Length: 253
Length: 374
Image 1 (cartoon, each protein chain N blue to C red):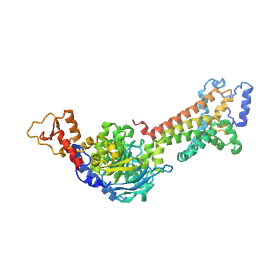
Image 2: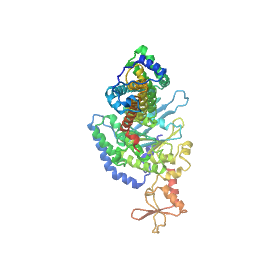
Image 3: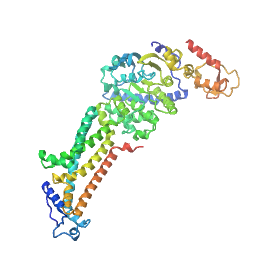
Image 4: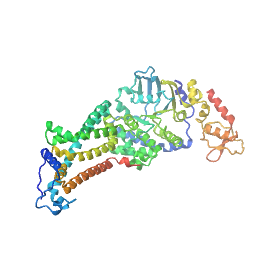
């Protein structure tokens, strides 16, 4: 089996320096199959051999990175959106701040965070969370604002408190927009988390990066890349199912 | 506006309803009565204070002005709606009809004066508690699209903390009352027709058996045919539930049809006249009212009277002509038939094909003269 290496930021630069100097001939060790040695398009046996040690841990880490980022991002965005829903003047500064965060180049943001926070999961999550805010905030606020006026009028006229109106009327009616925001955020973060490896050696970015440094090693590159895509599709599908379960009324015609 | 009481207490019912419907209402009265009694029993058994079925509403020098506006939106508006009557607020746009309605349940804060519901000032009540005691129906209905019909109707009982069984029983009862199959309780508003949605809106407002209902152009968005049907249904329903109702419309014909009393407002929320429909049509207080009710107010007045209420000329053994109408037909419709037949007399025929009398143009003339003299 091919020896695994830990790749950190320092080595990453080394690898890119190597890549720049000319084609790298992969050395997969003596036990490698012919398919791997010849670096054919896709070697299934390499995937099954390395599933438990390489791909599965990376996938799990990737799911965790995404879940934490979207979870925290959702909580912050919800709080911001509820505040802006009540105090309209908060919308502009919040949009400005989240848009600024959103437009910072991701690689730069990761590196910027290393100095104050360290090359760890906190830096990774702070960066990922900051990319969810714009999407989630906008969608939640739009959802809340799209609740028809007559529905709010009826709620008030029947004696609902602000809080009851929010919990029983506005948030349920905003659900389709909220879930739509979550879908975009989750897919974005799953893609973005593949570069977390530059500061924190976890996630599907690790095998992708390793493979790129080895020729590229096609099988590993394709396997890790495909896992990223499949993860995004699966997460998106789950959210669609969640929305269908939570909003039966949107399909009633 | 002191003529209202006397004018209302005598003479035929303020709004002419087809008699067939009246008898229908009478027949179902027994069921509705028991429904109301059972809801009264519920109130007694729960911790909540017993609610009156209907309460008197009194506006005392109510005024509303907005900062930065010189003219008041409502100026010293006073009138009283007796318990169980329908008061229609009607007037041109800008006359403050909807504002007045929303002052009553404190969705708009009062600037001056007082409003008493059942003798108690609304100002001393918690605004949300007050609203839960006042049924609220608006033109756009405002059903909650994410809740089923049953859940929508159960809104106020839910806010009041009714036990589940009581709420469920009330929902079924109301669905029957508004003429919807209780099985439709599991549908969503998007699956209903406009008329059905409006009925559900009324049921939702009635859910906690409120002593007062506020209805803001409830049938304004419905096509004319269904509108007439909903109006008739609503009158039949009101005959059963006998709520105090404040009904806002800009349509004088609807006001005449629905109201026990009509409050005609003019710009700036001034009360131009508060009276029964018949009184307003017969003796409009001023030129504004006369113009607002229309030059055809004589014709409109005829719609308030049924043929059975007239002293008809005896048939004198003459064979009835081709024109026939039931005693429940309004004089307005009868006149229209006579005019269509170039003035031929109309035979009033009862259910057993017995000719009860003959209506002629001169009899209608006499009716108008009598009313004007009254």
